[in-house]
Image (cartoon, rainbow, N blue to C red; front, side, top):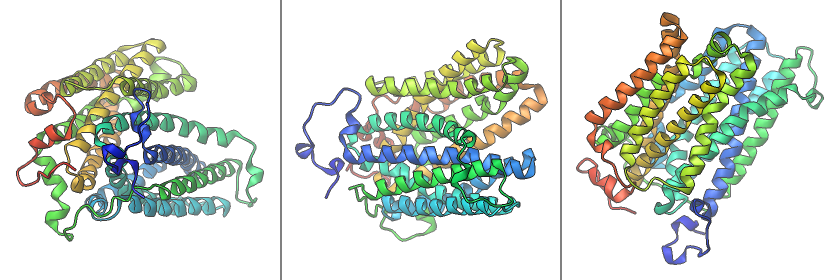
Length: 452
């Protein structure tokens, strides 16, 4: 049976939809978002458990850093084949295989916990395998979205996807922390080497396991069958086609690199513990509020944009959002008031969400269907570099100049990047309507394909 997104307009269900909820008319989109909530909640809760698990065994901050490295390294290692796989094979099937692999990894973490293993190296090996699965599922998941809704509802789908991500990304760590504190250790078999903290980790791994089973069951129930999009055999030219397309498409190169440098310079997430302790003097409770503020702002903005979408002047609004992000980053750096800092961070999250929606729409609408996997892989590289190395850059500059000065300089740097990119990439600044017909007209010669 074909999905509703594959039906011609005359066969699309005719029912009145509340404005802003158009994407939810698609059964597959509704199911996919239910699956995403479960998958993100489980992954974020598991990240909290892994951090506690590792620290409970070693009590070394450096070992916590290695957990992030173990997850990030596969994204670099498998970047090119992951994009090609997403275009060469059925994207839904790729996602299912990757999550089955991650389910086995969660089982392995649970076994390590129940077995009382006191070495961190098995955990790093499992995290590397989880990262490998995410490296392949990421491009496939991104490229699957346009198959779930009609093209006219794609921006609405991306907007709601951002809101749902923010909700799950905020709730996941909270659920992980809550499960640690509940007296549920009796649900697990006792082992002489199983401390209270590790028992809590085991409970979280069990929750993640159930969430992954839920995710797999829903994805398996989707009607959509994208099939093979890229029919050419693997070769260097085919595998590197995503890089070539982005390099020859100023819209995408400008959008991806703009986000990269702005987050590298203006991201203050890694420094929030310093601000909470030494600048705002609010302690752990204030830190929790600071970490939640950007997500709250982003979620509110995504809900508003679902109701009042960006129909015109998308490029100008993107640069305005980046400039606002830089300004409020400076305000946050200079603030000595908790409430002013919270407002500044909420506005930064709102501005970042506008950037995410515009950039995500450009990625999907300006890329031919048969190349979305490889282009999404390139975007994943930019995102990973900005997030991972952004935290490293924040730590280094804070060590040199202090947290306040580093944050203020980073915010000013973000403003400079916005100004420079508006000059270097005029086609990005001039983007008006987010539609595939107009965006793909700027594609490199030889890569344009008819709209499907």
